[in-house]
Image (cartoon, rainbow, N blue to C red; front, side):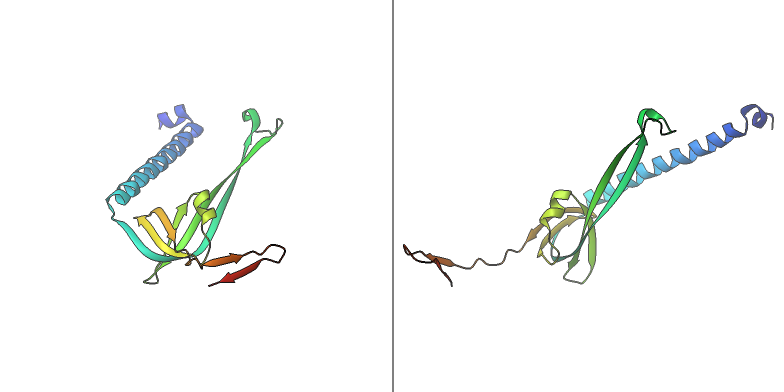
Length: 150
């Protein structure tokens, strides 16, 4: 009990919060390593799939300038965007992956193709391109353009 009075209430509270935060960080690191390892040991699969939905998750951050929490120097604002795409495979199961902004921009809901993934890791999506139709252009000088699709 003497330790409690020496260290003080706020010292004990600080220690408890520090231990909880540290345990949370360690847990997150271990969970991330476990998922990475699990993905590496999963087979790479290529399946027929349809992109059924896309979504984003935007998080906003405000940080005080010069660590002045009174706000006298203002705040810097930033945001992060996470991109997700959900695919439906032939069995009817749906799988959602976190993807990059570039991959998000290339996908269109309703696209069908071959989805490649490894565990929870998105690898690629090769969209089936509709067969190109043969197009003949007949341009006669001094006339309108005549387009024939065969």
